[in-house]
Length: 293
Ligand code: BEZ
Ligand code: FE
Image 1 (cartoon, helix red, strand yellow):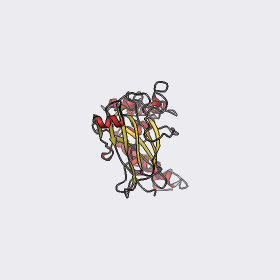
Image 2 (spheres, rainbow, N blue to C red):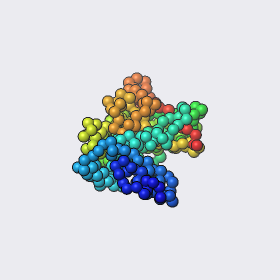
Image 3 (spheres, rainbow, N blue to C red):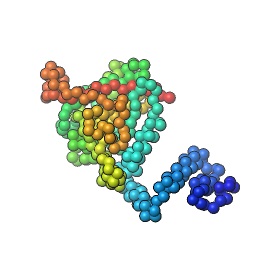
Image 4 (cartoon, rainbow, N blue to C red):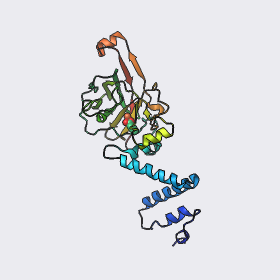
């Protein structure tokens, strides 16, 4: 028995006594994780000195967060998102070599097995919003184009909702698509200029944001997952730098390198050739994949 293990629980030695009960046969990683959480949690409680009522309010908040979660709605992940923990875990697990594109949060609205489309397709099936041409290259860190890269993209419609949030209102697979690069490593498709939108804020996490004087909005963005054999999978976004929430993303997902340029094309020659229906936005953004480690 260690000294702490033999001791009675006191305010001073609280964390040591709890940690000393972890059996030596415990999986070392689990012991490390529970030990660190115990130490930091006890330190926080000692700093806060909650009243019994405050402690119960915290338990009630966590209980509501659990009750709000199901297979589709993940309120616990939202809590992690608004506290910056999701982005911190992402940063720790995606340290990229110099020159490689940066990652950001996946978010809850990715759909697996979206149909693959020919390059140049229009993923905007509801016809809402400003038409936007999205294009660029997928490169390796030596600047060479990468072929056979699977490009999985998704975005909200002009009302600020993903198709899966409005089943029966938006067409299935609206503003989603999978594309595959050819030998030149380029990609191009059409969508709609994205807009800012709120993260789901009708639960305890939304209430907490309100109590903290924080808004629930994410600046306008487009999601990407890029997958290629021999390279690290890249989960990322591009953002509209002119969005009013670009400096206050509710989930801290914005990085300077992910700001794209959204240009309004009004040149009659280009309109005639590329989009006879009228002016359109153009976004050009290259991605650089890191080699698999
Ligand atoms: C999203 O960008 O889709 C998202 C990310 C985090 C929380 C909610 C939504
Ligand atoms: Fe999103």
